[in-house]
Image (cartoon, rainbow, N blue to C red; front, side):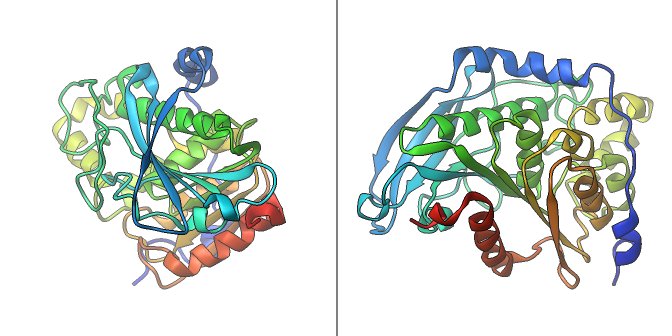
Amino acid sequence: METDWPLGQLQAYRPVLPEPPGLDDFWAETLAPQLARGPHAAYTSVDTGLLAVETSAVELAGHDDVPVHAWLHLPPAALRGDGPLPGVVQYQGYNGGRGLPHEHVLWALAGCAHLVVDTRGQGSGWSVGATGDPTGSGAAQPGFLTNGIEDPRGYYYRRAYADAVAALDVLRAHPLVDASRVAVVGASQGGALATAVAALAPDRVAAAMVDVPFLVDVRRAVAVAQTDPYLELVRYLAAHRDRVDRAFATLSHVDGAVLARRATAPALFSVALRDRTCPPSTVFAAYHAWAGPAEIEVYPFNDHEGGGAHHAVRQVAWLRSVLGDRLAP
């Protein structure tokens, strides 16, 4: 069953979404305090029982200095080779956290410094997290999409995007990492975070891998999506009939198809044509808006799981082609 347009129509879909006034100033003001402070993180070695990966628990300073938790996975010293390591920052899907230390180690096994980052307030769904969100908001639907949606300055994803940029800067500052070769990766909400970081820190992101991204072309997504999280917004607007314009004005500050115009790093997207959660047309909207060189892998028969393990093989080969053979020293 098709969930969106046929592939030919998707490939031609290039919406020109309006930008909110002062968007660049909004994000510059948001990020200015943490840029002035500089990256800050504390590392604690963790014994995971794994012999091919060295792991540390990380507590980094996020937006408003809120502590954000992550895992840092490194290839063992005997396998690091000469020179600094490339890096990969991995962001999580909706209501997922960094998980247990052994759950996400692919990029360390491929020869990278691999930072697996919590999303504040999340991590009690499909994987666990350890980071809270001390900032409150007005009335909202259960979930995160409508948290603080009355005002872009209080919106949940303003804080989450700023945390994601802080994580990038922490990994770039690590003494074993080549700051010029740090990539971002994520699926669904993680894809939204990876897109945002590539757009808000274009001079500091070497590559982006964006899979079935959330928070893209949001007006269309809300009209087409068949599942949560977008249906959280539908229910919110059904109750708050007088807040439609205000809600979409806030969302325009975080919409990936708007922000992607600022992302200049090479990118590899993936899209699943039976995706009921993040409609394929919205993924193509972000892909076509991307300012840098971009490729897209299409999975015609998959839902929101996208390319899964098959796509990981494609990503490893693609990232090696972008960052060079030293991806696996």
